[in-house]
Image 1 (cartoon, rainbow over the protein chains, first blue to last red):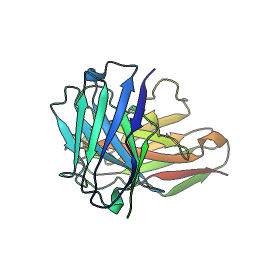
Image 2: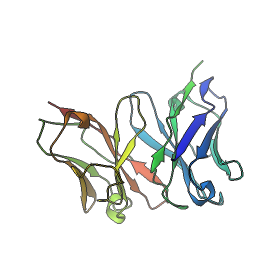
Image 3: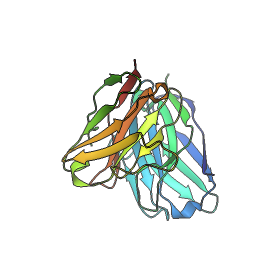
Length: 120
Length: 110
């Protein structure tokens, strides 16, 4: 059974940073793209970032490019999202998701999410 | 990348069929047969309902079906049931090798 467990969210001041993690199990982690999708309170879904199975290729939404960095540790089956220069509009639940194969940015399994609250 | 356009709300009575639309551009919906649909109940993670325009993941009811014409994709829910009341989001692969979501449609079962 695929399981994705996010952690690392919390309350952070504007301009601050956080590192989100996603522990994966139930599948061969290195063979699949991994993704981050966020959802602001009461709003819709926004695709944030994706990384290929090998970690060689990364992709970002324009809204986070230059501020967020996606990475993965295939030896520990863990996905990361380093978020910096945080703004109020980054407040959201951040979902970790798995792609259907190494290069696809489409989520096919989702975690339950971790809340990032950017506020002074 | 602008969000795909979905109607804010659609409603129907139990047993009826409803169709949700999702409009994009030739750089996303119109350019690829990689449109997906997700169902989200309040406080829950999204659940994949359709992928690659008209394919259902294992375990999804055949009351859900997808199609596409040009830059617009559609999700049809047949035999509407109370449990279908939720938010629905479309998504599409884009020319930037990213994914773009729709604005979301709230489905109400009357």
